[in-house]
Image 1 (cartoon, rainbow, N blue to C red):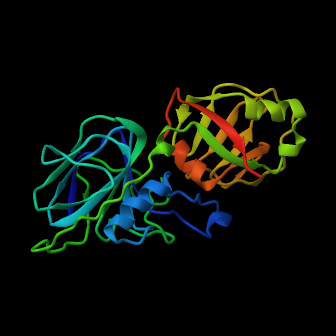
Image 2 (image 1 turned 90 degrees about the vertical axis):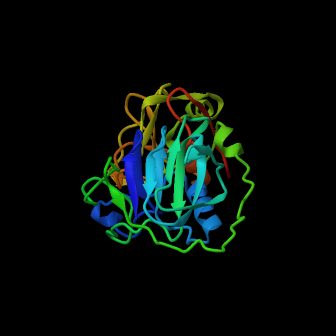
Image 3 (image 1 turned 30 degrees about the vertical axis):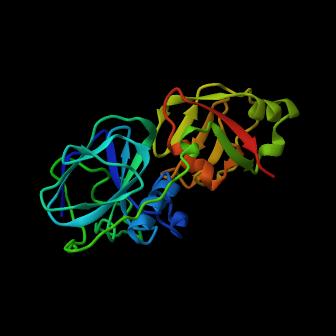
Amino acid sequence: MVEVLNSGFYSTIQDFGRVGVQNYGVPHSGVLDRYAASMANILLGNDENAAVIEMTMTGAKLQFNCSTLICLSGANMSPKLNNLFIENNKVFKVHKHDVLSFVKLESGFRSYLAVLGGFQTETIMGSKSMYKGITAKYDLRKGDVLDVLTCSLTNTEHHARLKIDNFYLKTSVMAVFKGPEFNLLSNEQQDKLFSNSFTISKENNRMAYQLKEPLENNLKPIITSAVLPGTVQLTPSGKLIVLMRDCQTTGGYPRVLQLKEYAIDVLAQKFTGNMLNFSLKL
């Protein structure tokens, strides 16, 4: 088992989310940065969909009450195992009473902790992803105890490591496709979408990222229609909203762009004040 000594700013259990239940109004949910979570799981030999802890801005403090293997990926939060610094994207042994902690955020915004076999928490509608109103808990709190698989580390050596190109943590370019209502925009509006830079506002979370700079808008609201993680909506006030994994399943604002899957990973590692640009992919 793993005990949460300190949950950090906002930590949750996530996998790849819920599929096939959006017709009931249930969000996809799941890890915001699939690339990072997949890398941590793959290095451990897990299914890439195995449940991980997603930590936002600051890391949690966790005590292991069994022996297992762990791997971190995504944001660099200066992780320490028993007060010794460890690296991302490398497998480490942990023993009973070992403590994992984090010092400060060095790059990125969200870090992912994978354990051998994945976190063994409750499965609801085919997923372990925490979401308010769906799972009993929607984030981790001090005192929570998480089940994990126990393994014997006797006479085992694990050198699994992967050199990952962290360019995606630094780039500001978001690859997008045209959204269903893109062609309703004027040529001038379309040009501004791709020539202007946009700033991430303080209104950013697992549901959506709002951008500061408005885009002049004269489009009428649409009939409520399906939206997806990565959909970029344009509000009547001209505000651009980029939907993320916990977004609603329908909306009435024009859907002017759609982020590529990889671009959602990129955006998940950005925070308030960061700049971004949209790049159209044909």
